[in-house]
Structures are given as C-alpha cells and as structure tokens.
Image 1 (cartoon, rainbow, N blue to C red):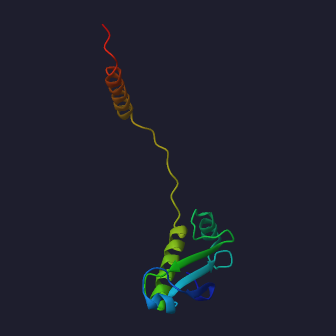
Image 2: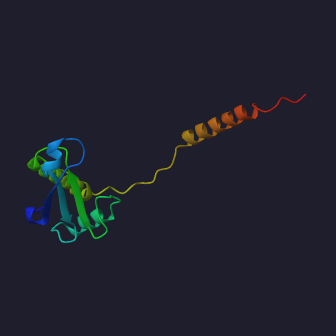
Image 3: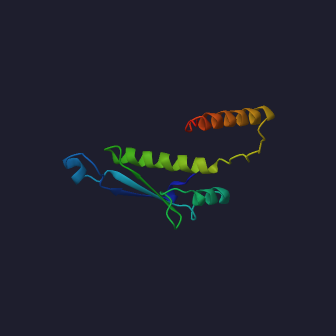
Length: 129
C-alpha cells in the first residue's frame, strides 16, 4: 500500500539509559511520510490529515520515532509497522451511526430510580418538631 520511495528514514541517537552505546551509536529512527505527496487514495489522505494526532504535523507530514531496540533495522521495521497501522486505521470507514430511542420500560426504570434517589435526599434534611 505504501511504496518504499515515499518513506524517509533518519538515524538519530536514542534517549534513555544505555551507557556508552546510547552516546556513540545512532540506532533510533525518525520515519517521515508526506501524506499529500503520497500515492494513497484521496479519502485516506483526508482522514489522515483530519486526525487529532501529534505525529501528524501541520504541513501534512507524519513523523514516527522508534527507539525501543538497539538495532537500527529493527527500529526501522517497528516504525514502518506503526505507520502501516496508522494508515490501515485511516483506511477503515466507520459505518454511520443509527439513532435509536430508549424503550418505554427503560425510561420508566430511569424515572423510578430518579424519584427514589430524590426521596433519599429529601430524607436527609433536619427533622422538624
């Protein structure tokens, strides 16, 4: 679905513990994917751009950081898997919601419990002589 020439990987240094390895080796990965310049269908592009996701920048670029592994290749695969999951979720169309009405019995039960609760609260007042 996503062609490899649309992806841009950048090796960066990982954060967190790791001793000398984390200071010397750039094994974390930034994956950049430009939504507008991609070959995705227009509907999927629109849904990706409308997502309230901090990984989608204002100019339509998805930036995914992967640093869980000490291997550059494994971090690339993890970032790619996360991007594919994000695109697959945007490609899935939500069915329209059908409005339903509560049943008469559920309405009656709700009102009965409301009146019972009101009686309990009314009984908490000061007792007058």
